[in-house]
Length: 326
Image (cartoon, rainbow, N blue to C red; front, side, top):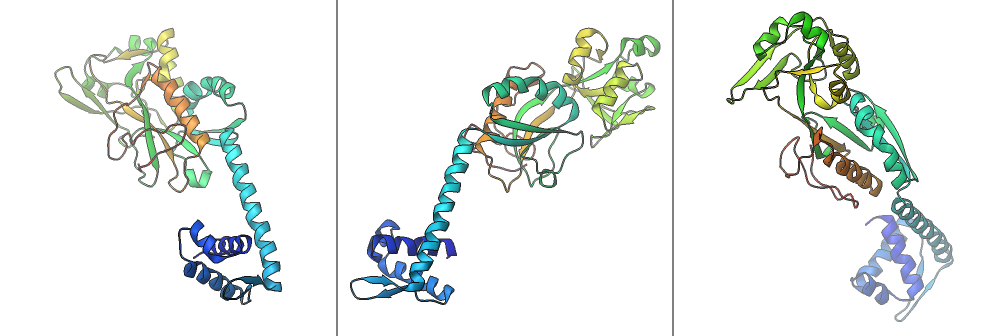
């Protein structure tokens, strides 16, 4: 039994005046409570109580130890109340990690509404296209686009990133627009190195036939922002989540190609450290963005709960009740 529990039992024995009352509180037996006090005395190497058949009295050591125990327990209770008050007020700092383009386009524009709802909460937003180590970075919650591989983390799927093949009108005017995925072999394809199969682009035809093309080009990058600029500048074709280029498509700076083919979508998840119970502030943060994304045409949420790596693992509401691993 841990020392804190022994201290709590000893304090209650002193304050109630007998072992039987404490036994009733703890749904235990008088003998068990007596053994706990004896264990504490053995641990301390000092006698705390002088027992008789009907009562007990504190020794001098017992008096001093009771006062110290009372101070410690009061301090712990004050800390508990303070933590609960802080959590209930949704305050403090939340460290969030996300891919660069996703953070710029889908997190930052929504933070004004988030802060209006939770004015005491601060966000430390870390944007990086690589998968940040949550433990090393001290990250509370991270957005991940793509299949999940790290089974040590807990995940909730909150959306789906639809992909498209895109190029600028200038590039297509100069090099022609491919009508079949196999024609991509003759084009400058800009490769994102953050994907496992970076040079393998997959398409599904209207007849259900699968087409996987090995592509190449002069440029590859680990930065979605760099690739976006390169595509806008007419340097080649990209294979990417469509939401990265929403404004560019609407403005005519880039154009979707091979639109008769379906590209496999990418799951959008939020992940947490398994050693950390998702706090109330994490729960409210995730619920806010899950609700926002449910109304975003570029990020359709995955509503069905599924089992297995990289799939939905149940809801995370304001109480942050979430289980499972990714």
